[in-house]
Length: 524
Image 1 (cartoon, helix red, strand yellow):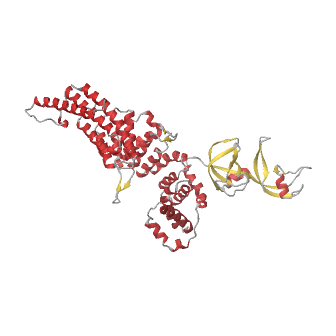
Image 2: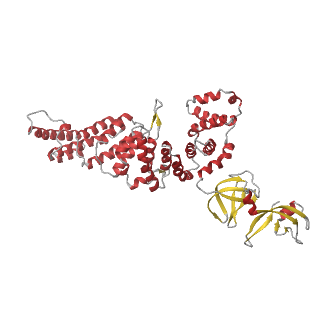
Image 3: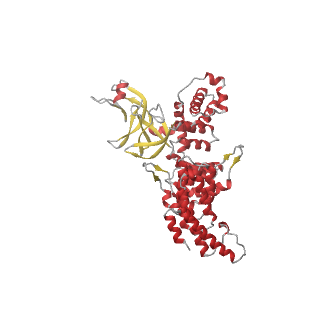
């Protein structure tokens, strides 16, 4: 058996001689095998050779490794046809599944070839499908680095095509290694999403309903339902993954389970609340509430995002604005998206062309943006995002207009201050607000998620009271009192108060840090 000679020829790069020797060996052995059971003198084709018997198996191995060397010789995108030819030759040998050393080497070589094709813009979809079909006929060490590398390559090739699901299901995500769940650091130092996270979200994306060219809806509901517990486990096991929750929510929407969708999406959305598409999907979930949808669109369009990604959203926003009779704002949205379409040489949708032909569009003035409109609706949208955080009533006790900070009282054990300019342009002492707090305070400073003005008279009565009486100003002092109510020097000066004057006004409770006790102060 010329195994040693074939190996030496391969190592010396004398592949034609190695191929001749290996082919002659195979034909000789197979002909002997056939002669035992037949009088035929015709040489046996490789694909017809008996798989049993050590001599035949070794002959196939020798041929397979020569074929593999031909893969290496043709390891450039421009030689893809030759590469595919030798892959098919290896497949024709029908080697047993336990030839893992050969198949694992093929995995690395095929993966590298696929990457090379994409990096050189030489990818040919039809030929890659042929290569995939051959690759899927081999058995590899699983899990293994080579097997993961093979997935990465075909993920790159098929992630945006209809070929993705079949390959992913054959590959089987249970074969990911622990390191596949970690971010990858590129040579330039940039971190890339873990390949396992990419896999699960891409698979989920392909399960979502989609329209065919004939506008019919395609949605494999059974497959989506089967994938839900798998994706849910990933969300629970790998909380650092940002996007599985988003696609889980999208699948829940597709399955018409909006209640569970919100519960799943909210923790994720809080982390990504500055990404426009979080609000886009929340709007989709709240599609039966037009006001909430409008608020979500406002929040989405207030986020910093590439204009190319906002054209569809702007068109939907324009439709809402038109339905509200807000033609100036609608024209602003339309102008912004048309500018992007024109800059990228995209066609203008028929709906927009019809809008542009209307009288209201022609007469409406232009604006650079609708940001002031968006800003007024952001609190309403964010209230949806933090709807699982309990609201609390507070009363405004003091305002620093320069720093845009207000002091509040929630109770005699909970009080402090927070910045209010995100929520209100104007606020006055004594107003009541519903707020959602972000946990505790930092030396009295609180962070809040949401704040809206409310008129809670019952709450006001706990911390405010009418006051009427004689103003008493101590000799040589700039402050005064009405009974137990403190009158601040600023009010004494503003109202030109003098000792003994009668005054009626309102007072509010305040906490004296020095005395560590509650007292009353005049506010009007």
